[in-house]
Image 1 (tube, one colour):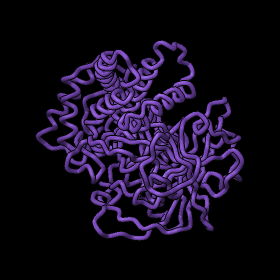
Image 2 (cartoon, helix red, strand yellow; image 1 turned 135 degrees about the horizontal axis):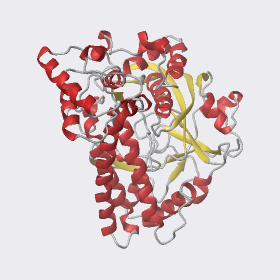
Image 3 (cartoon, helix red, strand yellow; image 1 turned 180 degrees about the vertical axis):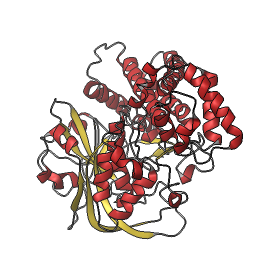
Image 4 (cartoon, helix red, strand yellow; image 1 turned 180 degrees about the horizontal axis):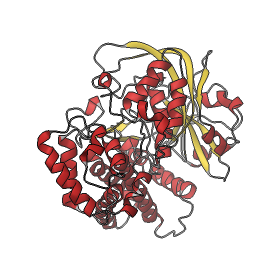
Length: 497
């Protein structure tokens, strides 16, 4: 694979490397330089991603920023965004440096980005680095999501820098030194909703138009209708973004930080921070300590937030549109599509003959009141042929006696609305294994002691999440263990990395 720099060649930016935190005007990017470390070591490598580009592991130092070769022109993206509903102004890649683009085996370009590789012009008061615990979480989750069929950035490599980094995990005045790490993540591009918002907010329509033209021509080249290209492009972003969040809901994933700067124009899950999987079913759960009071990004609210974020993207593009009423029509259509997709998701997840709102609402209430493990419940439900509650008991923390009658009534009603043919397909969309936070924490605990075996074990387990994998059942197909209930990193997390 050869390195190229199409984004830098076709959009305005600052070529010179200058890490002074500042407002970056009339630019989509700024030159950057990955920090060099004397003791960088590779601890995990994704063969399937490397194979896509014909990359040999011997080149791994390139993907830690320790070796700059011909064609590489490292840079940091400029973008803004709404954070927790409030416009935050300029943000940008404060601890991520893109080292270039390369083509995969079928000729499609992808951008390679190093998270934790040092200071950029957007680092503000940060150090541009990342720690091992957050890097392991992103490395494992990127590939786990891909295997689940959820659109995501990919993870090529995970390196230790050999340097200690100070972090205050819960922002409570108790910083500690942690191992530093760099993850190389891969995507068609790391252009975000906020990449467009920043230029519109400044009235810089020339840069906005340049970025839009580059994005459509390079990443959506199949759009040939010049007259309607902008609207067709937005349609594709809307569709892929809705599909992504519906998949989140299907597998029980909570992103935790659905700011507009964390929304990919490719409909990819990006920026894995304080994410989590629903265990004790609760639509109001968020894994993010920063969101604990407002619950803006809670599990059940994610479809609404995505629609809100889409509306912000359309606002950002609106200066380039003559008939802005069409944008409102697209928002309305997106709401309808979201509702339809959500209903379809429930039909498939439950193996129903048709959508039944009352049946689903009753299930949601029962699961909430009895603290049902979401992943286990749907996996066990597929094998149920009679309304026998005991077959589902492994998914329950405690079946309240008062609810047992309600459960049996629901199961009888449910089985009347499904059939063997439909239930046979349930295991194709209801995974048996997901990356629960306590699982990731076990790998982190070992890795911080120099043992990386659990990273590889989990990576292999999560490679086939819909298969039975009976040999893993005892350790990994189970409810959250008692020790993990209130353990930092297992229940709640922060944005600290």
